[in-house]
Length: 119
Image (cartoon, rainbow, N blue to C red; front, side, top):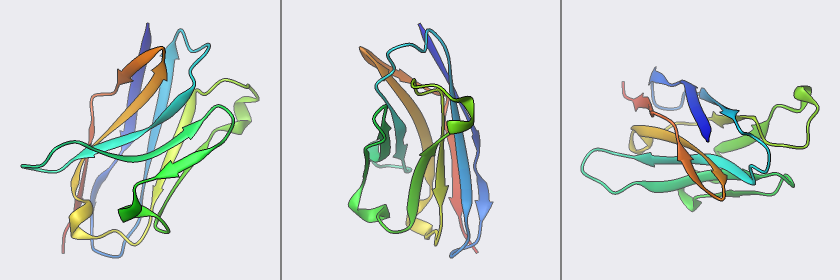
């Protein structure tokens, strides 16, 4: 089993920045991918960003150039354990609950972190 916990989020004005953190615990060996999806009110959950154990990344077109994803290399391990989503130039349409996931044979999800972009 893998447990996933997000932190960060909150209220920010348009054009501002926020950083989300996500840590996987439990049986972390063989976690192949970590990343985020988000769900805005009244909309379906959508993919936001991901990073693989080999450091390949991918982003939703709507956040490319504004969001970045990174891992905690300070832990000096080949396995994915801690990842960060840096969100810059935030827009009101980025408002959503952001869910971190870890993929280890199946998907494990965090509890969600609210991000609200509003003036």
